[in-house]
Figure 1 (tube, helix red, strand yellow):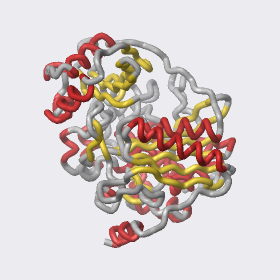
Figure 2 (figure 1 turned 45 degrees about the vertical axis):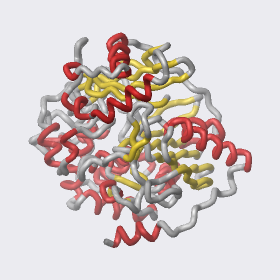
Figure 3 (figure 1 turned 135 degrees about the vertical axis):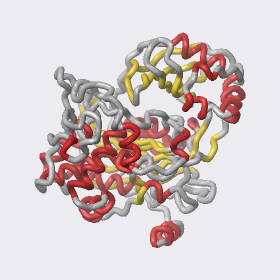
Length: 464
């Protein structure tokens, strides 16, 4: 009840103005960029915070937060989902400093029932190298997510499956690993995960995040979805418990920026802990994809960037920190389509810290099948045998109607190409394609069962 009263009180607060450290030209260019990306993608709103020189210099919101909040505001908490993972990594490092665990402990010390628990370390859970299958690789909520779930139920269903690979030999994003890590944090810390977050991270930072499941209500931003180029529709959130330690947090962009400032200042945690989080973990063969503990590290135009994204039903976020340049860009959106969070981040970075873009690798596995499947959907044909039960659940008559009506109006497909190579996640193979209809470009994000004839688990079209 106290949370609800506070949330309703937030509705009366004034919109924050940007700080002075951005020039008028920069502020105008950012406003134009955000407005254009929202218009192009159809995403209802965006909340943006910018840190420059180690302090907040912009905190603004654009668009519609919900059907009951027609004007988005910077004080509202948006669901940041997987951007929460870095907070759990930090908490486990704190517990290691307390002598309550080691990141190199085997999982069997805490949860012996997990498959391969004697061979998986806590570090491998945090770096997505454990081999535990991801329980939510899809970009939509599947049928089971209509019912509430507890962490131990996720562990029983997914963390007791055979491993997808031997721990430490491959990288595969795994929300399951973070649920296991959250349970370990509770056992080692001797208190519920949220209590530890509040005591050790939130209160010292002076921020007041919400549990994600608490923000599925009229006083908060609403998530939106879109089937292909159909109308933008309110999304039905998943039942309680599905993100928990894998993505439990809702907060404002400015609150996430306070965390970024702590990263820049190397405060709250010892410097060596921040460095450990940001250090890419290497596989058994010596290779690395740049992922550390809850964050990715990469070099862009000669600058080091620490970043992560987040997705829940109806929400996408991006948090990028140029630690050496003392710059951060936080973008939170209430649409789980269109990639507005990435587009806004890139355009703001070009304004405040220009950098060259890099091209994506081009591969075309299963391209013919993907194109033929899309053409069938455009023509109104749906073959259930080519789709898994989860995908059949997603493609309701409404979804199929939106696909056919919105895409057939664009005319024939004139271009179809892969934008990156295949990668394993959740037992499926993820591939992304760029689809052209004359001058109009769209993105097709797919997951399929392994093998040449594997059925489609996801087949989602969205604006480029």
